[in-house]
Image (cartoon, rainbow, N blue to C red):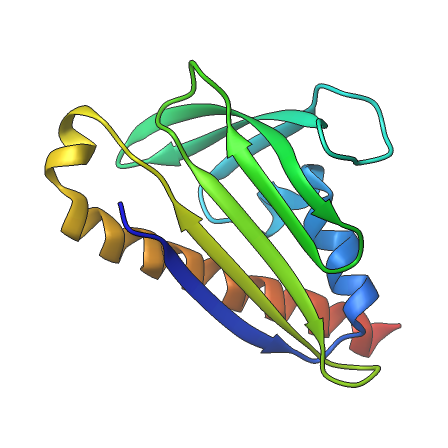
Length: 150
């Protein structure tokens, strides 16, 4: 599947968006259909850190293990699914400051699915884009609400 990129501006300090997004345990709070995320490795997060997640996708539980393959603390994290996961996937999340109180958050996701998912790449790509956009709208609302109430 060709990479899908979605971005959104969030009215919150960049460091708060970063700290929230890189902690996989927050994923069920902002990613639709995410059931659980659990760190396998101990903190702090670093290249080589791993976590397991369970998500609901097309009516099925999808289990995926991820490893942090690139990390530029405060601005970029890349996670890649490990062998044995539901399908190969690489996700890069970036946080770019727009002043002290706003940021641009971007996600690029891609991979080479097999089986049915390989046959349905065009609709899958559209579904992935829609799901990522929905997730980031939810993240925006969640973070902006936290900032307003602080």
